[in-house]
Image (cartoon, rainbow, N blue to C red; front, side, top):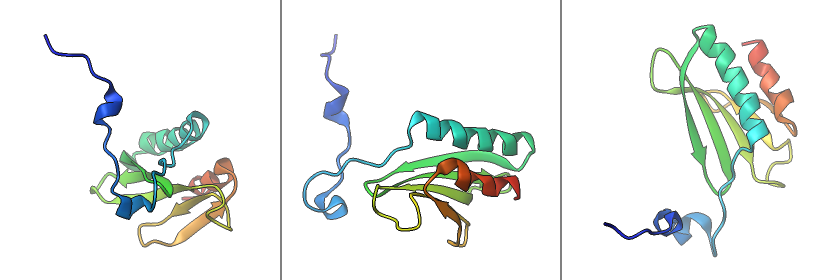
Length: 117
């Protein structure tokens, strides 16, 4: 039999060059935010527009990316920035070209952009 070890021992750590001095925790979506995003995603999946998604968690932002049916390139990114990092609001939707389509302090408001896409 093997030894029981803590999963904390196997978590990858970022090099200091990525996070600066010390250790910075990753920005993540909370349960309510994920629920709002997944509701939007589900509507677009049912409509046949999106097929997959990607999640990314980093020290400065979290990203939920929607992937279109035709390829593996994300179509839109929903970004959550660390508190106090963005003057225009903590949440934003970014196009594949990198253009900020909508930004604001509340995720529900920002996600309304998909009601018109």
